[in-house]
Length: 486
Image 1 (tube, rainbow, N blue to C red):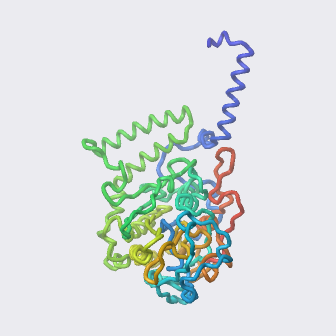
Image 2 (image 1 turned 30 degrees about the vertical axis):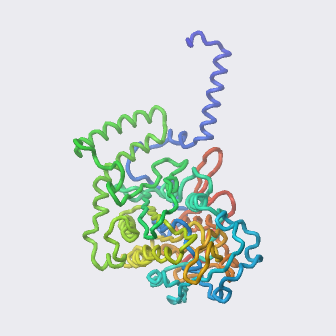
Image 3 (image 1 turned 180 degrees about the vertical axis):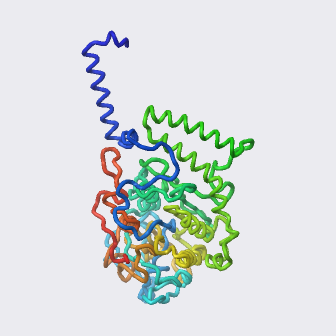
């Protein structure tokens, strides 16, 4: 429309609608409006948010060892010696107490109790109980805080894993690592703040799927998404230059592209433009830093031996743990290792030992290696899955073989390192490892405690999205697990 032909009525009508659209955009996407006042365009490492950490942190970084599928707490860390006396009797209705079951066992006519076939022993000054399947992890018992009373509301894998990783069962929210990257920033200019590894597993069967959204930044800027470090092919996808492109040519291209993006940012203020600038630059820096990271030839034999015989095999859990320590040394804020196939509905006695063999030696080695280097005091290590397993057997029961269904009412995790009081056992379950009877810990309180160790008040780390102050621990009241803090 010709502006000279614009009537007074049309002027106020169009202006009013435009202001309304601007106001609505400010409510729904405040990050775009905030970006307009940004002082810096592009750059490498991003700093912490103003005012963070909220208090002096005990840990600078997180290594999260996630056992995807739901490890059996009864066979590993929650010793119930009385179960052998009532083996193959039905689980009392008063204990099950109307709990909903998965479709995999809801049709069973019986719920026979399956005591663990594995021997337990006490370890460390605390006398902590460990299964024979975790004999190596038991060597660092005095560094661990074992939490036996963790619970969740989700009973199936996908919502349960999404829940513990993002704080919500519905996809689309930022992951724990993304929140840490967003809040605390990066200490490293040539590696991402948040790195994910998905090593191989030994139980020879299909495992539950993993999804990129488990390490996604959700509604946070995409630069806070986790970057996957791969075992085969290129360590990071699309990192290497294509044939015919040399380093100087790549540098010139990125400089020109950066100028174009900076010009576009000045026009529209979209923060994702800054993300693209920063991520292109990060990829350029990683072309040198990733080969150095993955070159373990200078590691001593004594160090390699800590992690077990598979440490030199890329793609194994042992190798991933060594990579985690090397990344921690280089300033990566959050490293997460997803180890799959802990979902043992049948043939638990065949598959659980294989899974434990994958991780047991390496978990011990990681803790000892960090401690030997003076890094355990400021590195938080977390081990656990999305839920536990039932005391009753799924399918056929024998002393030598049994399976267990999903169990969200209680399961076991452990933490070690920065801010954690080692040699601690927290929480109790009943004689069936079925219900929490003392000090329940919700999975969001696990996340609140992780944030606390890194100097963050979980109630104050928020991001306004769709009109709400979103946070990792949700809107319900959650508390830090103070009983495990040093």
